[in-house]
Image (cartoon, rainbow, N blue to C red; front, side, top):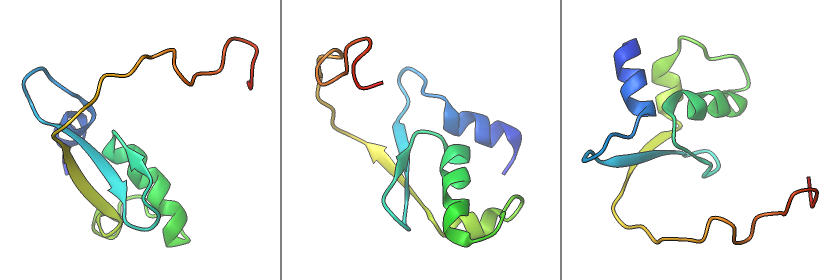
Length: 83
């Protein structure tokens, strides 16, 4: 995968599909493919840098088709709480 391909996975542009990536090993969800692969390396037991094929075995790409508006301040710790 080229740098341009990785960059496009990290960006959400107006009018394009929104996708997230899920780890098949544990279900963790990331918005960035490189971030998910950084996480997936924990499942491989060794540093997998450059082993794109191996990391893709731990990757599911999901298209977000529904959303719900939430209050951004809801369920968030207030300054000084829980930090």
